[in-house]
Amino acid sequence: MHNMKIRGLILAILGPLLWGISGTVAQFLFDDVHVSSNWLVSVRMLISGILLVAFGMLENDKGSVAVWHDRRDSLELIFFSFIGMAASQYTYFMAIEAGNAATATILQFLSPAIIIIYLALRTQTFPRRIDVFSVLMALTGTILLVTHGRLTALSMPLGGFLWGLGAAVSATLYTLLPRKLLKKYGAIPIVGWSMLIGGFSFSLYYRIWEHMPTFSWLTYGSVAFVVIFGTMFAYLFYLQSLRFIQPTTASVLGSFEPLSATFLSIVFLGVSFGLPESLGAALILGTVAVQAWAAYALNPSTTKV
Image 1 (cartoon, rainbow, N blue to C red):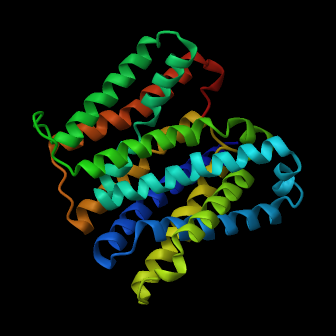
Image 2 (image 1 turned 90 degrees about the vertical axis):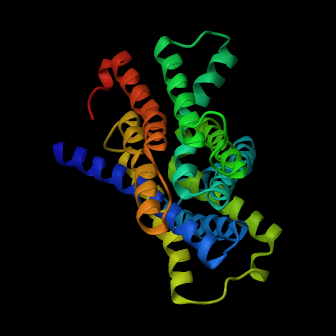
């Protein structure tokens, strides 16, 4: 049992770590190679979707296509593919292209605060004090992050900020929309098919074959890393970790994504990140830890790792 928990913790760290690294690699492709975000998003979803669906079929031949036997579930999957999966991928990479990998990844972590506000409005109940505290933390962190502590001016590109907020909203939809499908069919078939549907549609719409980057080993090696390690393996590691540890634990370890993206952006891409931005990032990421603590406190039976 102890070894299984350690395996779960390692997998839950590796997944977000690879996501964070892939964000920094994507910024390199946008800034230095001038790869289009539309092209990269399309290729990333298409190839990763094919690989994840193939993996699911090898793991469970019948289960991987079961969703297509139910008309209502099929329509929900298609809806999620565009509104949840494709939207979250597109807004995230647009936030990187318009800003940088560090702030894009951190702003995406506003999602827990948005979920709190959404559920309060939907249920027409005032949030718990711990939830209000989480929202205030996230808002304060966002202000510090985008103003660099100078509250009278926006100190990052407006496009990067707006796309970052869009990524947070999309991440919220990505979290809320497929809950029933995930419970019924499992994560790998739903993530795989939604990526494949989104990627195929985007590829046709943007005609990716007309916008292929000039060949170089560095360019296509970077694209391969984003697709294979930064997407397929990252999702597989993170989803497999949920077999061994609690989702709340995994969500806290998800903070390795913005941490790795920020560190690599500073070291390799020269992104400036001062004390106000660091405090802002800490407050935003802290909302995940606060919510995880609240989940443990309210459900003592889940206090195992």
